[in-house]
Length: 82
Image (tube, rainbow, N blue to C red; front, side, top):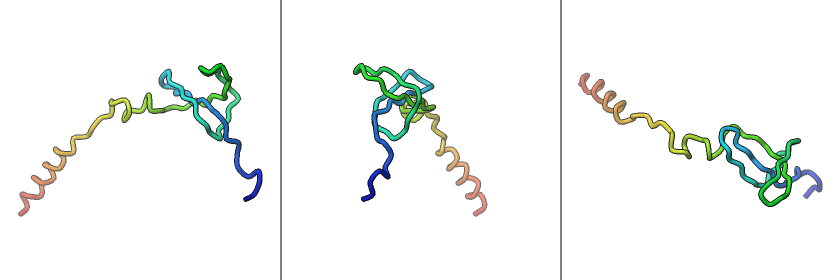
């Protein structure tokens, strides 16, 4: 394998801009901003728009479309033509 072709893989804090939620993980992303984490160390922080704390699917606020009514309407419309 070639040496020095992979980006630096280091600890990074991702912070949700929509909620007060942050998590520490490893990534190749970098940032000029830093934050002091719970363990006392400072890590680069990357701000994200949506995470599992604010996404409608994970928070249970997702709107479900009424597919059953649309199917019944389709069947009624094309059953009349027979």
